[in-house]
Image: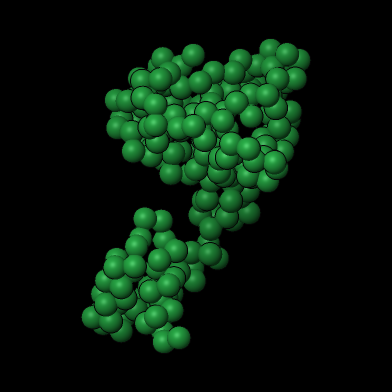
Amino acid sequence: MSARGKLTELFRKFPGIGPRQADRFVLFLLSQRKSFLDELIREIGNLEEETATCESCFQFFTRQGGMKVCSLCANPARDASKLLLISREVDLQNIERTGAYGGLYFVLGGTVPILEKNPEERIRIRELLHIIENRKEVAEIILATNATAEGEHTAEYIENQLKPLEEKRKVKISHLGRGLSTGTELEYSDKDTIVNALKNRV
Ligand SMILES: [Zn+2]
């Protein structure tokens, strides 16, 4: 396959990108100066090298020295008694942008499809249990999966897994208030909706 064809295929793997857009990206690259292409290639290489996954919340962060956790998790001003669970990093960023939440996060890394036989392969449930087990200050776990069937199913699965901890440690498990209407994805919710959902958690 030609480089043009291969690149088109690669761009098609990006979220939300169809064949026509992928082709437009390639045409755009062809119209750019060599210096732009060199920079793009260099930064893609740097991205992998500079970025690590936070050992606490599992979001990506730019590595500084030997830091194993991101600046959010390392910030002593964050309320460590609250742990908010979201499916993807983009949801974390969306909630963080509202400025309405001062606790910590945990990125599940996906959702559990209904009828999935191995839910533990779909989300970071083992890592989550391990973190809560070791962090005695956690008093509330907020489930903030999408208000879709799969999101609800994921929340249900996690709640069942957390049951023993809930009883043993008296950890409160809450859900984002359904100011988020059914079918809503956090990623596409506006600031007010998220702030209300946080405030009215049940
Ligand atoms: Zn973190």
